[in-house]
Length: 446
Image (cartoon, rainbow, N blue to C red; front, side):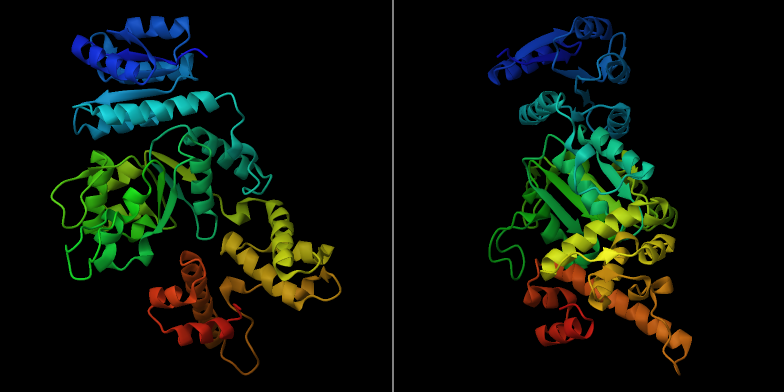
């Protein structure tokens, strides 16, 4: 099998020689070009598997070459070498379609990791992207087709992606599909709910710590960022990060290194960052609650997950899928949705999105008789509230129902985060195990 060929574009002979020797030690072939024109000629001739280009070239710049490759040689992953600290140019390169970037002075380990990832992209390029047909992304609407196309597009890149949409739309699922469809699929996918970590523990949880660095640090801890080495870190609800953590996170993303609490040196990391929020980050920037520089750094590419109300007949497709899963977990036959039930499900706006649909169907399944679900079995709470019982003030009932829904979601989230370990979930929620057990029974979560 022929050795892959990497084109190195740089006007400095010493850099070309250094990178060529590094690539040859990786059992790769190196081609070199001293300027933009020579690079285009070699790419036009074909046979190039990966391109590394400096940003400053005698007859143009690396951004021009990135654009040219997207138009003339779209199958070739291209990475750029930027001046130290020039984040703006790096972000522009990623937006134009660059696979990744490294900063000067170039670290050989960074080059090795980047080229290996790029070659995995090239090998997989001829294979239909699994994100397009993945069974976890259910729906046939045009809105979901656009999401699939975006997943396939951004999966090839190492650029940070900001996933936004209403609560319950499936932002973490989209993040997982980006990871599973790209060159990091063999590495770990580490989801982090930024709003669920106590402020005083954030630095230790994210960056790790050294033994003895503070009371209770009885062992070294690598932290969430380093646990995603070679894979993807998904920062869910990133808008909930306090400002002091935003500063530290920005440095990690820019420098690709973390400093554990109690350590004097930084540890290099190879992690792709994906983030999400249901909050309007641009509004948070304007209000001074979210750093503008971090916002632009994580939002190199944005991907919107549509709410259920924009997905048309996907509601019924999802309903059938959810009922199959629920019936299997309860070891019963899958109930049939009557036409009246289907019409009732179709007409609702679902402010809680897919999560709300799941809750509605779970309740309906317990109410239904005779192997089918009728419209009368479907209890839809307007605005998330239950119908008002006789003799009760509407406002009182609505508030109580809304509080129960908030409590229910918090408990389910804590259980999922702790893999259904009730003791750990109770600790995360700040209540006793007995209190959690009582709330689970009262809220019908058994």
